[in-house]
Length: 184
Image 1 (cartoon, rainbow, N blue to C red):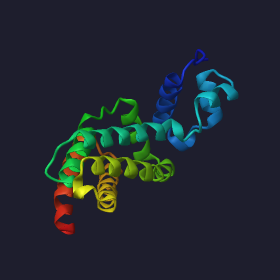
Image 2: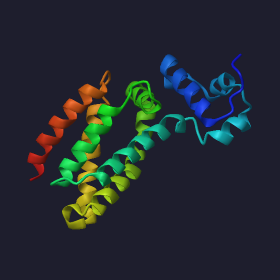
Image 3: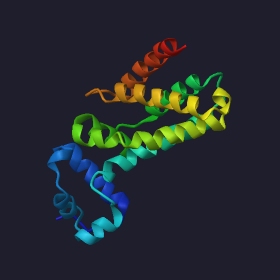
């Protein structure tokens, strides 16, 4: 039996390792609770839902990309989005919590569909960053459209089974470069 867990950080580590080892769909909440060595009420004091053990890390990644867009001073919104997303992907360590969460998404269609809900939040964060950078003269709708397109390109490239940060970054750069010609 594992020692009792005393933090969300420890629960995350145990859960992500179990999901990667056995598959997201195969690991039950009861198995997670048992592996953490805590009671059900204690587990849910730290964790909102089983999905949140993966999705919270994807949300953190999205927040990081939005912050990177906000910090950039680029010629166009599209360049700011491309560079922030590609830089974030290139910095993504497959062994980190975010990296593990993305690997779980790649191999688990069920949780991947749940991650789609995050795109609304992420789109809002990217839109705010673009508006703050006064891209498209601060036009909310144009900024939101660019953010939505960028997220779509990211999802298409990352979701491929076996995609790595380096392969995703290269494909993402090409997709961004090609996509700008489609919308001009």
